[in-house]
Amino acid sequence: MMQFLTVFKREMLESGRNFKWIWVPLVFILLGLSDPLSTYYLPQIIESVGGLPEGASFDIPTPPPHDVLMMSLAQFSQLGVLVISLMSMGLIASERKSGVAELVLVKPVKYSTYVSAKWTATSVLVLVSLFAGLLASWYYVNLLFGDISFLHLLATWFFYGLWLLFVISISVFMNSLFKVPGLVGFMTIVLVILTSIVTTVLNHILDWSPAKLSPYIRMMLSEGNISGDLWATALITIGISIALLAAAIYTFRTKEMA
Image 1 (cartoon, rainbow, N blue to C red):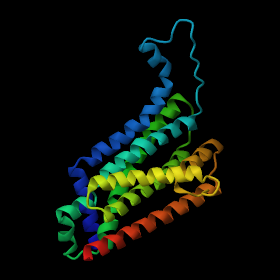
Image 2: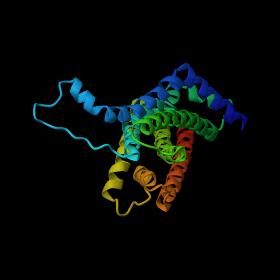
Image 3: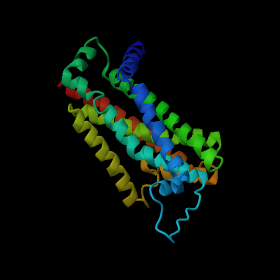
Image 4: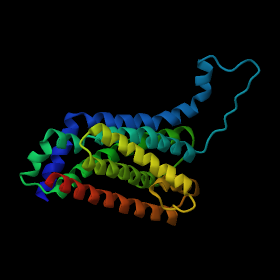
């Protein structure tokens, strides 16, 4: 436990020195703000850039609050996932490449401790950033479009956070396979995209795929209750994330000992 806390604190301090605790939450806040504000002020934006041709009309129905919040989740699913992939692509790979990992592991620190502490530190940063982004979006959704309860916001943060933890787990696994950070980031993004594509194609079979979390969250926000499918998808996502983390530890240990 002491080894875990030591590595965890080291990672948290490193994130502070690299200003990740500043720029990552700021990115998520900006992503969370962009859709509520741009959707609400779209007519004024169009007018400010010259407006429509004479005689043309542009009537935009006001979207319900949960749809606007889902727009923010879509931003997190695209740019947010990209930020996470780029931020974590050198988590282990860069230290393996530079030899720092070997220095840490001869202290001795267990492979499982080293990998899990890095995963945990990254997860804390991402979950805090996600909450900041969702909180910003929720505030302006309530202000401009209508009420969404704080409990529903917390539920959205919890369930969508599982998707981002799944992305982090993929990245950590790729870190155990490759020593080149750029390749790690590329393969992480490819695997996330493939997960979404396969889930879409086999939608009638993969009812509980991690990529189905967002659609089930939309149902939760619109209907007001958490479905059994959402709980099942959450459990499956947790299970796959744990399996990826275990595979990362095994792969990392095997490669380093070889």
